[in-house]
Length: 219
Image (tube, rainbow, N blue to C red; front, side):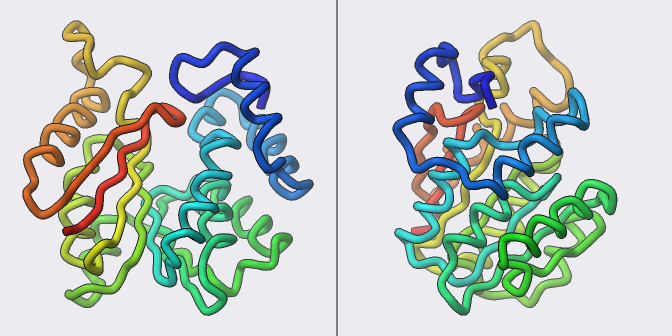
């Protein structure tokens, strides 16, 4: 929690910002600590300020039906589920039984497990199996970067008008503007960012929250 993940923040500014936002509770703090114990892979967990923002944003738009692509240990899904309407539902898609087992335990502790359905398997297949047509108010994409365009294209037609997709890691540590970086993940983010800005079905704005967070609204 001490290391800033939001883009280009100093540790001091990050600490000040987190200290002047609604604090995380004991359940979130325990999840952060248990995830940190996994080692370097813990970088996949969203930052506390992003989680707080996502909960508030979910509340502000009155989201009832949501989908998440990439659940990891459950911090982002917990943030979304806490912001959903009383009868809301979140579909989580992930490929790891191990990491999502931790997520399940924290959903239970937080009292939101009844709002969440977890599907283990390739997210593209899970999405393709859903009924066609508008069904989601909110989506969050934070998974394998080369798959972003596929997930996006499956979700957009299933968004209700004014529905929103939040997409994580769109700045990818600044690698998106470094032409010497050509790995599949960085290129996947570049391709996705270019794909979205050219899509006339949506409006979008990219913000320096976390590792870059794009808001995409279906027109």
